Length: 407
Image (tube, rainbow, N blue to C red; front, top):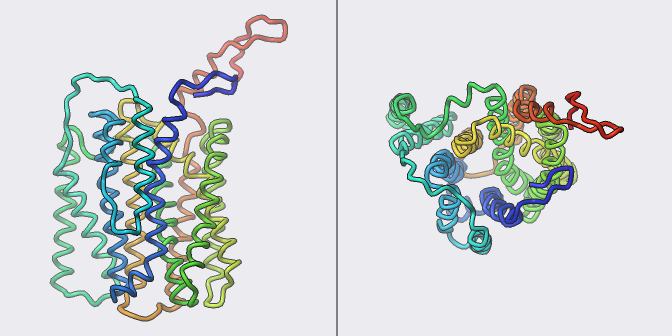
């Protein structure tokens, strides 16, 4: 990678960056498209908000379970091969047809890249049972969250509670006994990893609850079309995409903590603004400004927090660290979708404005906790600081100076 002094990037850097970006854009792209379509899907299939909540949760549960599994597989089988296998899943109906072009471009880029990986005979071990118990745990949690407003059969609720307790116990037992648990829990002993991963969980709870909530509010309460929904969500997503590279530059130069803290504060201000202005007559411009501010905060903080988490782990556990971090990302999303399904649980008709205020009150609390967690993210990893202090810097006379000046 290029350094400030002008060192040339290694060959293939652009292809590597292109491949990762094309693959990485699939999840947020699909989430946004699905969010815009939710009110129409509900109307077309004549189902309630609870069923729509399950539609979102099913996608997120699959993502949450697959993230740590994919990270482990990448560490053991090679990251390029696992990435390639992941790109070759299929799409659902015509809504996600545009995935085909992105997947094709990513596969071509990966083929041209010829990513170098060691071909040693590393033992393969993966905790499939733990992944299954984890999926059962998430399904049980989602069912109980969406049942908070009542109306469920008492026997179903009892079965869900028993399933939650049993799957939790089995999952914990597997995580303790398995040599390669699906998540690398020992990483949470590192304060910076715990802080960064907590921020990722909480900020995704905010983002992935906002994504499906806005369409329901705009279309079912205000009576506007999905064009208004799409442009409102775009005001958040586009700014995130624009700001994220700049945030990466800032975090490389000034450290991970500053952009993470700044972004989290902006996120909190944006969510609080939505809560304060939440009214049936709130203007499109006000919502657009608040969501744009939210996109700015998320764009500033996501990259710095994610980088801080991964660089806190040993290199040989990079895949597990990234997978565990992503798992917590989708845990936040699942909790948010479950809360949304519980609050908006109804078979027909538009939910009341008070329910939307309740949602954003909860999100304001989550955003405040996210702000607190960023304070404990490291500025730079210890090995980078040590490397900077060891650099010998020539002084004005051209002689060596080992004063320990940071570059």
